[in-house]
Length: 117
Length: 143
Image (cartoon, rainbow over all chains, first blue to last red; front, top):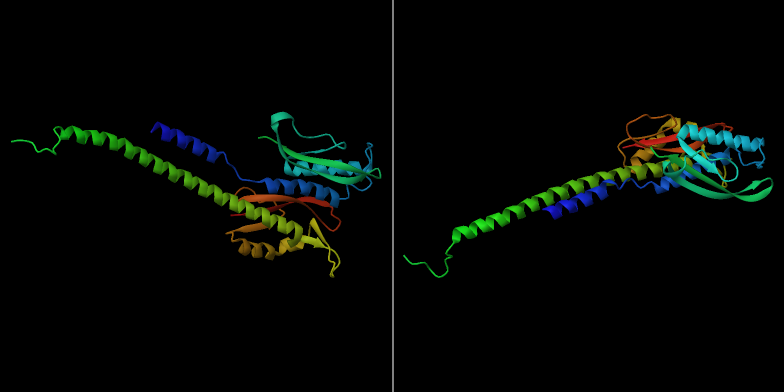
């Protein structure tokens, strides 16, 4: 009886903690962020210097996306992360694309996460 | 009166022994069966939730990339713009009705307005407007 109870406990706890598999959806969301930035023309004429209009647009749009979704973002070399550190961060996903920065092709990484509730 | 050779000298004791070993076995069996039932009911529920979620994700992806995506000039090389939505297609409602039947969902809504709490929902990020002036969330909800 004791053995059966232990088995049931482990089986049920393993089953309960198995949530919905949303790996594809998370990948799509990260692509959405990139796609929205692209459609809004935020990568056109992008340079790394502060005060660049394209960079300001990118900042504003990422701020808008974060405000609407509650997600946090990080664009490598361009924008400081708005994500919390350590265990408080749940990583949604990341993608890398080549964009022209100051006329040169550069690999840009976009990381999307959310704060752990 | 003499006892036959096949008769046990302590039949009563044997019956009690059998009873005390069968009762725990039956209890264990009952417990195992009820546990299996509980686990399978949970698994069924989770499978249903996963199926609905997967359908909503597929519908949202189709809507964003094809169903309500803006198109360029008509012709053979008609260009689609994924994530740039034509609001008139969503307002029409026929897209959601068609997809609802295709997916075998009891209820489906595809809209830009926040649906509030209730059904299972997924959202996608899109831009709307002739000049892509607004960032919005496309909600796909169903059950």
